[in-house]
Length: 301
Image 1: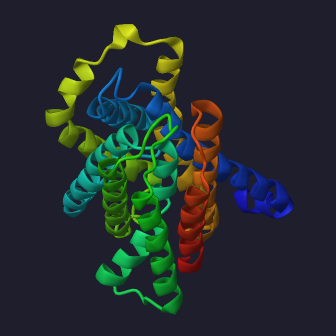
Image 2: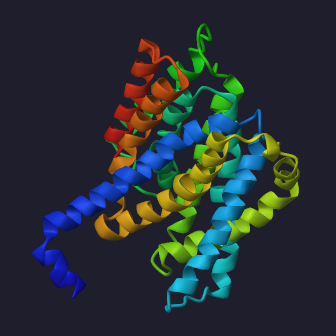
């Protein structure tokens, strides 16, 4: 039935998939704005990271209750999922949130774009994938863009000045997430995306608990405005859970390459949100750096 439906209405199916992927990258891109709204003045970055991981893990655990199909994880795969949870959830979310909280939101949106380039480099190192001339050029373009962005930290008139530490943490989070993507390939064909996400977030929550729970518990929840509560809900429900589910669904429909091409929407949405909602300045230097990073991702892909 499903195959027949796709045949009869291919344009409708393509439109729905494209819309889902644009929505996912909109949530990813604008998630930066929601984090900057509440961190670090109401909640420390570690507190937001824990809330994002812990409540997403709970929601993912509840999803199988509405699905009769159950999947069992083989014992040999638990260690890999634990490492994936540590890298792809605990360290990635912690570094990324801390970086977003301490640097410029436009910088965050653009530097997060470096993830596909890092994945390509790691795949060449650990999976022995061919690293051709186009990937070398893409890597160099991306490095040039990131270098220009990090070195140009003029703070005059900026609502949220960029910092070297914040930019470095963003890149560290991208390296952790890229390593996670390499690791998870080994089990991506054995289990459904929801099952994999559920376990990596559960392990990620456990690893985050010892050093993040204090920041979460001591947050100034009573001082939250309506916009602050909306921001935390946006981070958990849309910026994490919905974005991950939509991207995984897109991979099932179109495959990783075509799905990955939609990553170009992230810095567009993030930058537009930062300029229109937070009064940030989009300078010529940021535009050049952003174009170099985007060009690097495009050439690499």
